[in-house]
Length: 275
Image (cartoon, rainbow, N blue to C red; front, side):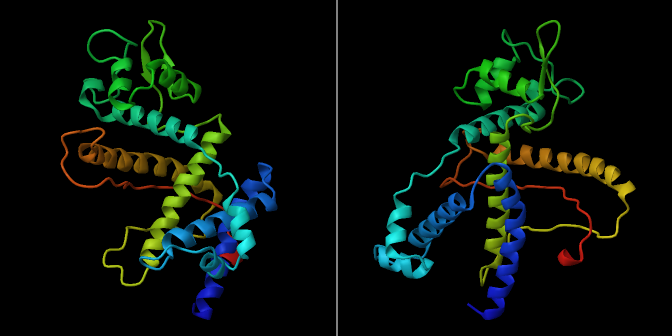
């Protein structure tokens, strides 16, 4: 690697790790645990993405690529890997239900807003919404989850009203941590794609930021961001739903791919170090 690239990447790693380590320490993850996790990823990527064509990746080659000893490669390879499948499924199913409630004509009222739905019965119901867009999960489980995070309320007549336009866990730290893993991974994967040589079609990656804003304008900018960004994401959701085979089984095509767009807001005191 070019020496200048090593120095630049070293600075990037430090910037990425600082907020991550802050989260790790707050949740009791020691350096030793983090080191084993990082070693495991180094080993997995070396095995899966840096092998020689038509040859099985050996422990010796993984050792050379990663800088870990053969003994350490073997030791880390035997460690049990953590899983967040439960959080992932809960997030995906709840998010799909809210998105469908916002866009699907059967569940929208005459003013274009999410209709107030009875739990069951004829026509548009909460149970039917869940059945169509959340698979085989019981409607009561989705109801309880949406009420738990404050996205749903039950009215005096027993019907349900949607309170939020997105599924954002407000109580469970585990679900919030799951979002950290997916959203940051997608952003870094996009940057990785754009950094590769001879990329014919870079992925969209833009931001707008100013560094001399008074404190008083930030609340207004936050509100503007929420309104404009949410509208864009709902528009993208409607387009993607028309082309997704889970939502629309009639869609033709090959393979199975994941694609989407993410938007995030940031603010912090200005620092010369990060200028």
